[in-house]
Image (cartoon, rainbow, N blue to C red):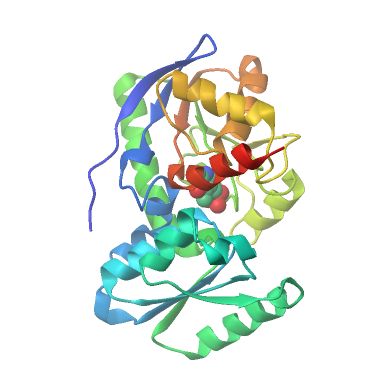
Length: 291
Ligand SMILES: *Cc1c(COP(=O)(O)O)cnc(C)c1O
């Protein structure tokens, strides 16, 4: 499956001029960096395997994209997660609901048994030839091919525009996207933020895949992953008012850190939209329920 390249668009935010790479427009289910990270698997012939196995959060964007991929390919999708909250099981919502509808089989384990269950999963998959394991969030060397294709689009755009110094900005969960982008674009600076955990955690995650790229800049943030915060919601709303819907978990954290670092960045700024808007339904419900 080949989808057409997403456009580069001028964007103005809080008086600053930059460019957006609209990877969120690629596909409603394979949006943003999940399309890039699953690109190699999207090109894999259906007959090559019969099951994809993964694990992670119960509302994960990666989970939904893998579910869509399996539906498309006719593969079984087995997903291990910590026990879902009772209200969610009684009335599935958001990415969880959509992934179930796409045929995902969920194995729920008690939080204290999660790490052991994931370790067992890895062992089991290593023995099964027709199963493939995708690490949490798609933090997998197989992601490189698709992210490199994104880097090529960025390079072609930069050269056509005659841009000398370019900062490529995108938020990180596992850091897979930002790190492979940095590796594929040594002539640019890649700027990211650790939306999950602290910068040291992000660094360790990246170092599990490759030596830390020297042109990768990790900005710090005071916000915790998935937290509800008035400043994050307000940033999402301002971005929407400026014309583009972003996700509520990663993007507001990245935009706040970017605005703070803006004056120290030399050259032009390209923000790569990382997709994930499908998760907003449940995040907005959480904001609405908040006392
Ligand atoms: C998954 C995701 C990320 C994080 O990507 P990594 O490659 O794991 O760093 C960022 N933004 C959105 C919207 C995502 O869904």
